Image (cartoon, rainbow over all chains, first blue to last red; front, top):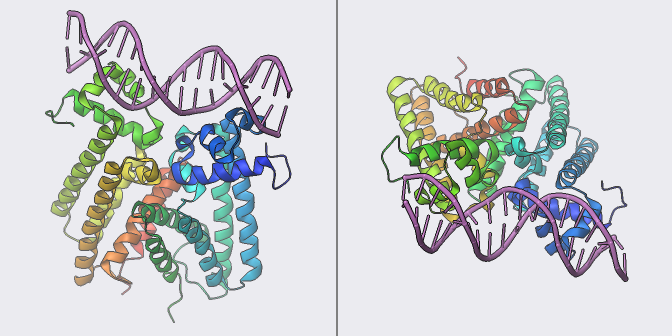
Length: 194
Length: 194
DNA sequence: GTCTATAGGCAGATAGAC
DNA sequence: GTCTATCTGCCTATAGAC
């Protein structure tokens, strides 16, 4: 749903659900968890999001839209490909510093347990990410700022997966510096050797 | 517990629980799921594993022991570092072809929702993995078979995280070839350029 | 929009018979 | 070891009053 204006109850519900999903997983939280933190009853939540499946779908859609806005901001702020990639990795790092896992990385783990509509949205999210990364890698390669060892599309897949995995293992040790180190190395490998 | 001999009911319970945990996550399955597939009642399961937390702990311990046995087998079978790394990545690939996620990668996602004993076992598992990888990378580097861009320990962390992440995203697209492609690239980057 | 009340089911776990 | 029966609590979801 989430057809209301910003600042609305629906948005606040999504904020809380997002935090819970990124820390406990989608099957790891309940309407009761949200209701308690929001100071509402479970029944009221169902007014805004009739089913948990619809809440989950809205969660991914909003997350993707916001993420793409941030990517557009990076495109506007940074012009060089290496700087854009660093800014991209920084988005992940910020999430981790908030003691969260990437929403879609988390959901990808439990994808089989998710309703079909959420599975589809998840793939759309990853595809959009890879499309943006591919573009940055291609342009950086053409400009001589990056050295690719394979096609931009394939490098993008590897990079996306590697960053998600770096978050996953960093979280296991509750150490966001672990992520920063891994991200730095992954990007350094793309640097051209003069 | 799992204090019984192999082939026992306890082992079968672990087999089923392992498959469920690797596909749905630890909070994604119940004693009822295991009982149904095994043809027992929920109460009987509690005889073997009094609580789900103990079942989960036994799950990780057995998984780690088996995994380390496979790593020892690789050490015995392959002598060159690049071949050992390929065999290592192949272990992941086999898991994925069984439509499963790496057990500990899955559990790492939901680590905050896990009982403390499971969290500790999880870290032990990852540490053991990194220790083995570090050794292979160090020896391969010393033998001129691999080119490292940083310390073996750091390269090991990056590789472990990247492989886990490659599984995660490959699963989102239900495409194990995606993992194979990423793994191939990650290992190719370690190849010395003559 | 939010509430109370409640349905109906499933969760992990235990007691005690066999 | 496995069973039946049961407890307690939580889950998603709905009906209907305000």
